[in-house]
Amino acid sequence: MSGSLPVFPWDTLADVTATARAHPDGIVDLSVGTPVDDVAPVIRDALAAAGSAPGYPTTAGTAALREAAVTALQRRYGVTGVTPAAVLPVIGTKELIAWLPTLLGLDGSDTVVVPELAYPTYEVGALLAHTAVVRADSLTQLGPASPALVYLNSPSNPTGKVLGVDHLRKVVGWARERGVLIASDECYLGLGWDAAPLSVLHPDVCDGDHTGLLAVHSLSKTSSLAGYRAGFVAGDPAVVAELLAVRKHAGMMVPTPVQGAMVAALDDDAHEREQRERYARRRAALLPAIEAAGFTVDHSEAGLYLWATRGEPCRDTVAWLAERGILVAPGEFYGPRGARHVRVALTATDERIAAAVQRLADSAR
Ligand SMILES: Cc1ncc(COP(=O)(O)O)c(C=O)c1O
Image 1 (tube, rainbow, N blue to C red):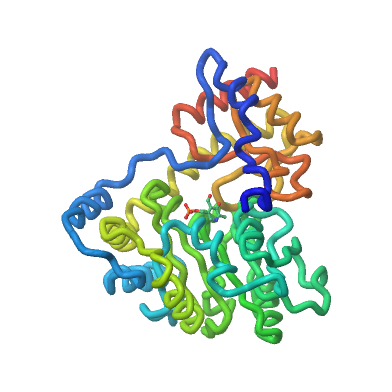
Image 2: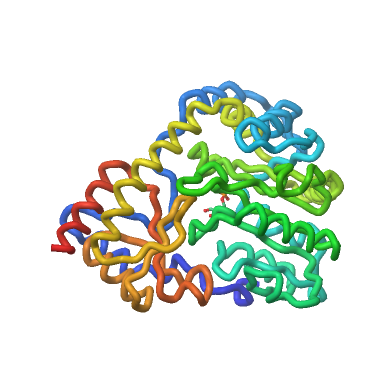
C-alpha cells in the first residue's frame, strides 16, 4: 500500500536539516509548522480532570463537547445553524482528511478535487480510497465534470491565500447544482492578518443551508493542541451522521481526557487570542526580514506561513536558508506550482524568530 503513496516529503529534508543543525547558534526550524508554545493551563487542568475516567469514550463525543464546538463556531467565526448532532470530534484533522474519501465510500469511479497548492494529505486520502485526483483552483478548470468531493482551504496552507465571499458563494452554488460534497479545511480560519477569512458554513457564504458542506476544524494551531490530537468536523447533518455511523465500527474515538481538554479549549477565547497575538508578533518580525533579504512574499495575508520566493528552484532556496541555520519547507511539497517557492512557518519561539531575523539581516549586508 505504501508504494502507491508519494514519498513522505519530510523524509527528503535529512541533508538540509543536518546543515541547518550545524549552525553554531543552532537551528531555527520553520519547516513543519509544529506549535511550540505551552498548552494553556485551563486546557491542561481539564485534561487532568478527565484523566481518571475508566470507560470507553463514544465516537460521537460528549454532549458537552459537541455543544462547545457549536458555540465556539458561532462566537469565533459567526457560524449559525449548526446543531450538536452535526458535529463529530476527530483524532486530529489529518486523520479525518486521510480517511474521508474512504469513510464516504468513494472509489475508483470517483474524483476528488484538491487545490493546486495543497496540504498533501488531501491527495493521500484520495489515493487511499483509489479515487482520481484533480488539482484545480477554479471551476472553469473542472469543465462539466462532477467530482465527488472538493476540498477548499482558506486561509491556505501553504500560500496563506484567503478565498473571498464571492468565490466561496460561487463554489457552493456550483456544488449544490451538481450534488458535489465540499470539505472546507478551516484549520487557519482564526489567523486572518490582512484579510478576514470566512467559514463555508457562514450565512454570508451558504445562506444558512449546510447541505453538502463540511467544515473541518483543528485545535492544533488555535490552541497549540497538536500533540493532543484534537479536531472536529461539522456541517451537513446527514453527512456527519454517515461519518459517525462508519467511524463507530472503525474505532475512531477521541480519548476521554482529550475530549475534556477540547471543551475547555473551545470555551475559552482568551488563550486562543493570546496565541493569535504571538503569531502576529512573529509574522511582524519575520515578514520584513525575509523581504529585506531579497525574497518576494506572495499571498500570506492569513494563516501560519509566509509563501516566499527568490525566483529560483525551491530546493536551492531551502539550501541557501539551511546554510544560515534556517529550515523551511520546499514549495514543491504542496504541488508542482510551488516549485519556485518555500513555505516559512511562524511556529518558532520568539527567541528563535529573533535569531532568524538576525541571520537574514546579516545575509542582506
Ligand atoms: C491545512 C491543514 N489541514 C489539516 C492539518 C492537520 O492538522 P491536525 O491533524 O493537527 O488537526 C494541517 C496541519 O498542519 C494543515 O496544515
